[in-house]
Length: 141
Image 1: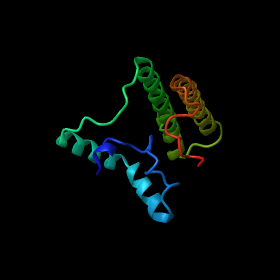
Image 2: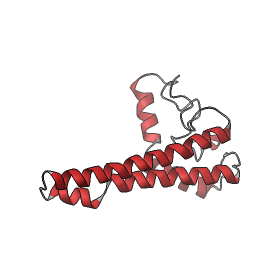
Image 3: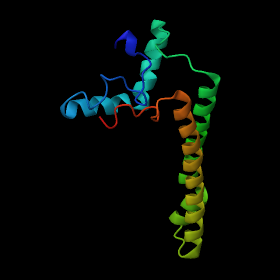
Image 4: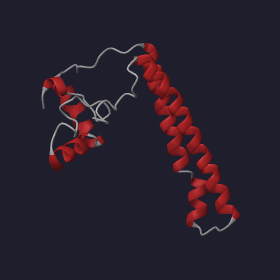
């Protein structure tokens, strides 16, 4: 692991870690492995043990605030997807209106989370001034 790439995750790949720059199946597999939460945790542990400070650019308070709002949006989506009312109805064999009601209410929470996350993600993109959503630098290349 290079010291200039320590602490890197799959949401902000450098040009060398994108599957677009590596050919074949090996590049995609390496990119997917780098997105694994356990791989990221292992990199953070190794970085901490080595005493590396990382190569992250300093962020403003506004960027940190917007990123926390995006994470809250992801949490709302997760709550909607794992709604216990829907899953209890579905797994207990409910039919008709009861299942429809619980699935629609779960879907409303998911849509609210997507809207919330999208709103703050657009603000974060505009704050960074890149015109792109962070983490998708090499998605279309």
